[in-house]
Image 1 (cartoon, rainbow, N blue to C red):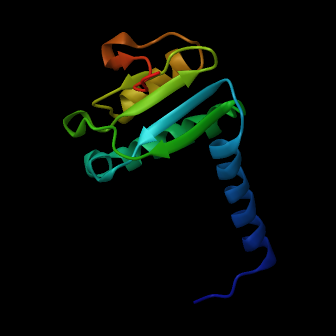
Image 2 (cartoon, one colour):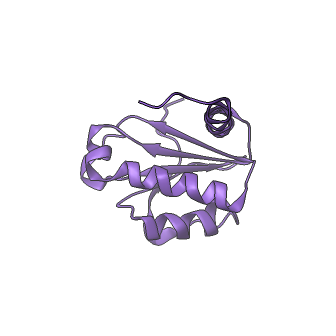
Length: 127
């Protein structure tokens, strides 16, 4: 195994810093990819990678990307939830990388829900 050089450590540090900002920052939008075992088996890792690539490609600083466990709808995985500041969350189901690109462009960046890919709007919490 090759020894790590200082520049290698700097690259790792920068990559981890970006991930921390994406997961813990405050922003106008929050995207949660559901990554329970059912979600992962259905392709949630590809969905997460697609979202992270879009955030980096568009150089957005106000989008938080995070993950959660199973949402309880295993047959509709992979799934993600999009929450815009001040609006109800929207759960998207049966995702592909192509659908994720459309949801990111239309909903995350422009605030327009992509109805044909959405399952539900609103929180599961009971007040």
